[in-house]
Image 1 (cartoon, rainbow, N blue to C red):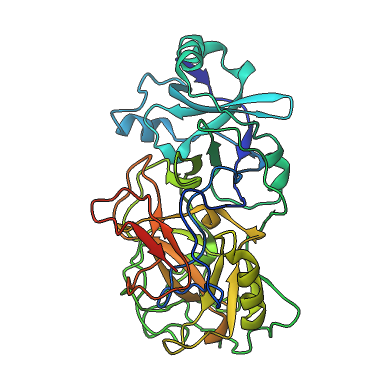
Image 2 (cartoon, rainbow, N blue to C red):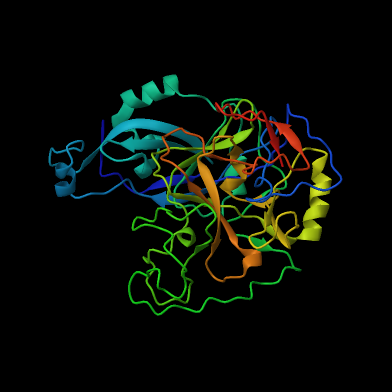
Length: 406
């Protein structure tokens, strides 16, 4: 089926946030609130939940992919009849946005990173595909419309789709979707400014802003596991296309927040993702250690914690000065589940400053990711058994440790 060079249409950006509560696993109480760290304890967020909440979003305008006839003709999988028609290969998803019913289209010859959202009235030439999709589509079992308002201010390079075919969980309460960290009043602002580089082209490892090569020419992360990533800052002379600028540009992948049967909400890919790709930054409220301990104590009884220590320069066994709490403020990383066989790794990162107490936290893929594959990381990477809370693990991997300690 074809559509004539489709007009600009309303797109749905579904990005999300939500409260997660543990179910099916016993949370063992402790005198000290559980804390997270990529070194000492697993990073934020519990796994199990049947009452939590998911998703969602803001409308924005977006066109279907545009290519010249020469480009199309050069790729055999694309239309070569000389017309300006775009061939609709499949209808992938649908959602109600206010009074408008929108459908996500996969264009023949274009990747899953180049889908478009169109109104139902624009599908006149795709009735067979439409009928087949409506006949076989998985139906959301929860009303997700309120989530559109929840994250209407969220910024996302790609639309994030939300699906729930498992239960009737609705809109989250007391959660705000944010795009970057927010600082409590008693948190000092980073005090180690970057000395702007004077590079006239792409920066190299000799650039005064960086201390090595962290990304390849495509932006894929190639640094070692424990390497802190340093990027050029806003006052640097290099261009926005500088090879060091990756995290600050945001993610460019299609993600889906989906409801699982045993782990509450999770996040999976909707396209092929290469190894080393930046997926998301872990964001929330930056708070002091004292505040983190108080909040952690309040949440321990429910087996709930989103605290992640900023402990890059903190000796093992010592509590870091600051933490990130994503319980009530966060982004899509809030939904990443645990796995004993993870495909994500988290790195410390610096952009605007070099203050080791207040570094960023960034997730990258550790292998190539297939469409519909869940994105997961290890909550307890050291697997040393040290922690204040234990829950049952449902990751299902062959090397599953059966419990998560954090």
